[in-house]
Image 1: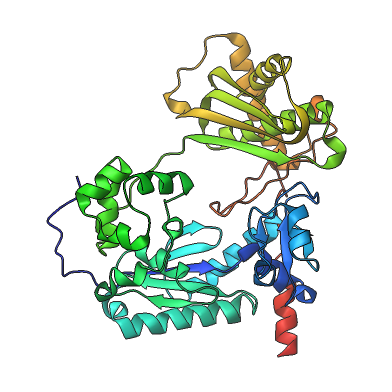
Image 2 (image 1 turned 90 degrees about the vertical axis):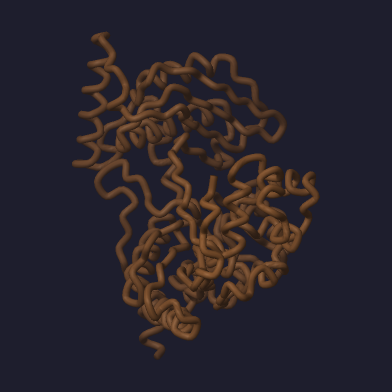
Length: 431
């Protein structure tokens, strides 16, 4: 139960939220001045059947957005420039953005690769002072990271509303939501603009008679409790009213990797080899986080037929055990015209909470895994690898989703980026 005794009048401005606009595409335009002012799509693989992971605002004007099929995007925007995604570059800019933002306010939480939250204290909570800090933050990003790096800033009584504020004015917006502005200032939003409301939740809210932001904000605590089907609905009532309540703690439940196949390896053998590569990579990531998995899900997405299987495992992070389980399940594969593959580990637990195996093979595998991991960190990720991934050892490089803030390193030198900031240096020379 959420504390019902929260003082209703005590809702000052407490948070500033920064959302970098069209982040991946903006970084590419910053690094490559020849792309500025042009429609750009960042792509994970150069295949028309793949999907855009980020679009510049020039491309968005034609309807191209994250998730648009690349082939469709080219039709929608004939002059579209597709560029390969460069995750290490985006991670490098991410760290620069944090460094620059810290010169204005201490970062309370890095929320994703393109978002961060700041706490306002004392006089900073006054509307005029908060607004000036927002302007100062935007100027710092512009001057310290690059001219293409615009951001939208929201300032509000809680972090939830501050993030929503960034949706009210894009790109390059600055929105202050005071308690006296609630809830009217939220009425222009769509339900799916609210963080936490996806299409499935929208259907659930519609079934409860909530079809708009205005109806969502007008609902009582009990109505939202019933609509959400849990205490989450009651939390939403307090957040929408501007109360600052503690965030819910979440635990990582799954870990995995997926890969869109290049046309040349959209074969049975190509799928098998890439999946073995993903298992090696994901199991190493499990070990780096001191985790074990009790299950492994494998999928092959096909244009005509998709295949997936869930494989129970003893609590393990052993690559060899997972390979053997996968190859046994692979015998029953059934897919047609593959385009993507993936592996996901579930039922994760801390390795310290797992009783070690008494079998000699398991103990030897554990020592082998640790030795291999150490060698890779010292000599490079491909200094040692299983013969089965010889053809795919350089595939499935680390991707960086918007909700990630770092790249897993499989070995020495992996995912490093020389901080040239070439586009920024050109800006300085032009100035």
